[in-house]
Image (cartoon, rainbow, N blue to C red; front, side, top):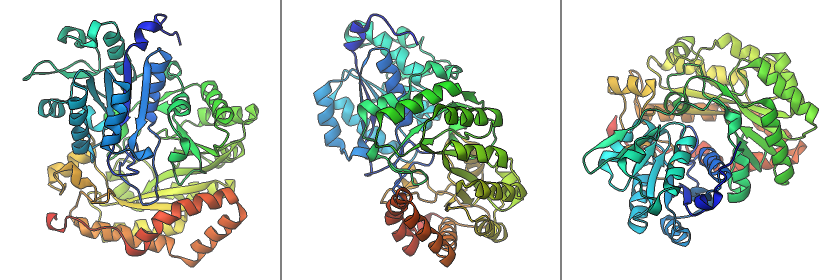
Length: 509
């Protein structure tokens, strides 16, 4: 990548990328943002990638992940005073949007000359609403925002006082902004980035700005780092938020060589790291690329455990090669044991192939984390029982059971909204008082309380089995790294497994 040569001009513009404070350990970057039962907290992979790009172009960059480091609002303001930013980029999510806007209001009062820019899935589809109702916000960078932010920063750096006029902002693709007190302008969409190799590695930003031990994913050995090797997903799952609101439904890949080089950088520069988590929508869907990646990883001599999101596509040949290259586990969305419900959600998979996949994964020695959901249109007691039976039959290493989570901009959100099945009208009610996921939907057969109880029942049915407990004990004693991961995840999870989930909003059925 060619860097801007006149770095001195850019260094005068201080850019602050902020994952704003909310609940302690609130995992905003994940697909369903919340405080999790397992203590999971995701890396700010999108903010981190943007930080790396801006630093590559010589900007003076600051990245603050408030929930991960325990910063409250006063800590954030104090830090802002110490750096005096000109451009503040604030990450957002649907359940935290009211809080995020309050944070922005405080930031604007303390830094009135700074340009406050929102990013994230929620504001990508609600830019008009957010800008019209909140004077503290100067703009929204919609969808993939890397180069939108870069272009805005470059124009600000080239302008005395950093304040841009409407005509200067109007040329920035992907940007929405307030032209005056009455009018909001939405510039044309920025095309999705095809050449992902043109972006610097997110791990460069992690190295400079973050402590990787602040982050945890129970599917990966601790400590770990998260990177992305592709963007977009062509599959048609109606509930999946990122392809529909942020990255699009077209796969775009980094070159295998580029990914291998970043993994070598991680191994060389994070001596404490035990694993890499690939946060692609599905790392394994392209068999040719997947096998090429595994072959190159083996040839490189890089020895590190890795985990990825996957569909049920890989066959035994692929899974065996992945295992040989270091793949420890895959996170797989089985979702339902009812073929009718799978078809309804646009999942594009068959129950029969789930069994083949699990048998192949078990033979290959790869652990599987299974994801299951309840509450899709048409879901009744019979189909829910099929899902629970399937989870017990497949017997993945770990499993999660949740009511369907629907987010603005997705087809599923439209389905539930049109049926009057979204029972929480305030986005802040999508979380419990402790920041955990709250059930926000019902369907023809289940109300919200029944769906939560169903998930609790399925969770206990899966985990409170003698055979399962024995298997975990063997894992814990045979492998110290595996034992450390199990204990770290089980400690916060155990109390929810025993007492069940919080039931809130009983009057909103």
